[in-house]
Amino acid sequence: MNDVMKTLLDLASLPASDAETAAYASGFAIQRAAVDALYAVPEARYADPALRFQARGRITDWAQ
Image 1 (cartoon, rainbow, N blue to C red):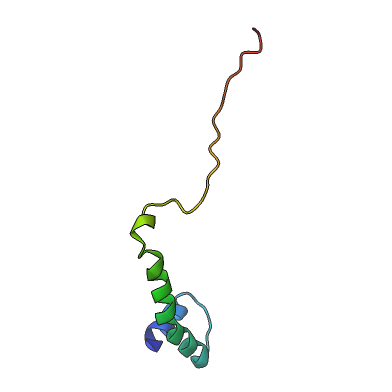
Image 2: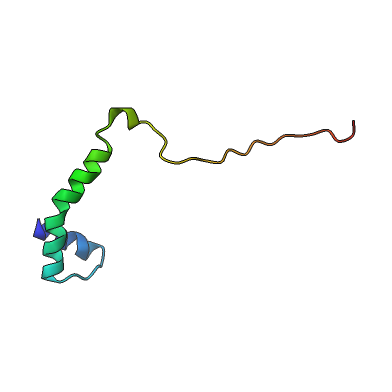
């Protein structure tokens, strides 16, 4: 996993020491499990995660 992490950081041009790379690699499994848990709830699969403002134009006839 350290080699993969080092390669990804190099491709992104992000400098990291061997200690930092090892720390990222050791925390990856926990982070991956947390991300997978977000998608484990079937009811939330198609839920919209954000509220959105829907602007609907109304034309009011002021000449009446």
